[in-house]
Length: 256
Ligand SMILES: NC(=O)c1ccc[n+]([C@@H]2O[C@H](COP(=O)([O-])OP(=O)(O)OC[C@H]3O[C@@H](n4cnc5c(N)ncnc54)[C@H](O)[C@@H]3O)[C@@H](O)[C@H]2O)c1
Image 1: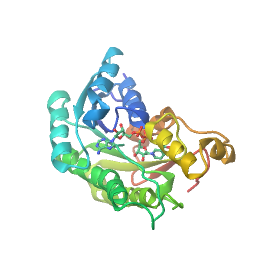
Image 2: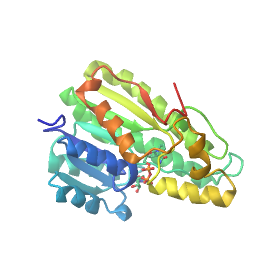
Image 3: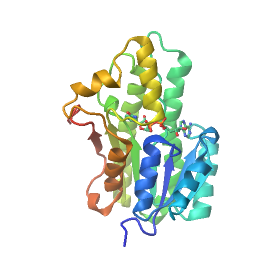
Image 4: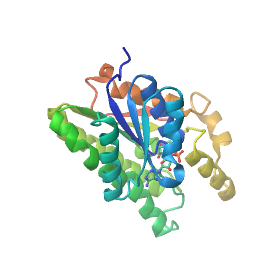
């Protein structure tokens, strides 16, 4: 029997990148997967890809920044697959710019998706977990949620907020049997966000992946599946005494 047999997982932003890898990791271990992503990202196609491997998945269009939209999407997932046992708040955006120069819209978008999106999805999905006194949540933070960096102020501030939200929610949910954790990935490639940042960094004269990777303790980048395997562990019974943690996945570039 696989470790997530009979479980339902809702993964936001799972049409590509790290979210897609998480969806595949949980599905390989038996979970039925609800993929919620923006309509343009084609969550239906991403779910179809899982089904071609004989796995159970539904794709639903939804915007985590809009409470009504993520509420309706979560209800659709529960209707089609059953009550959600595992929530992965993965949807995120990164906007670069110094604090004095960043466009107010980029600042706002960072918080609307990364912070409000996590808050909205928790409020859409977790009341049913509370009712059943069971469940597990993993939020995607970042090593920039533990240390600020020039040009990444909006992103870092939003990911610090995700860490604070994770810890507070973990306190609130611990007596109810629901665990809440986060992961803090470092330099993860093969994702849209990473290639967009890399291209922009090149144009702005900032260090790119090729400059940064050799300076990391492990001297290499990370891959979406390396994040997904830690997330799957945090969702499993093997992590039964882990809550409120923000787990570093950085090849040693951040240690806490
Ligand atoms: N790639 C990295 O190096 C890295 C490092 C640390 C943290 N992270 C975090 O990991 C998560 C996934 O990042 P990724 O690198 O796979 O990026 P990605 O751009 O490949 O994936 C992000 C996904 O979120 C979706 N999304 C964006 N806004 C949304 C919204 N409003 N509603 C629903 N879905 C939305 C996108 O369509 C996309 O599918 C993000 O939270 C990111 O901040 C990534």
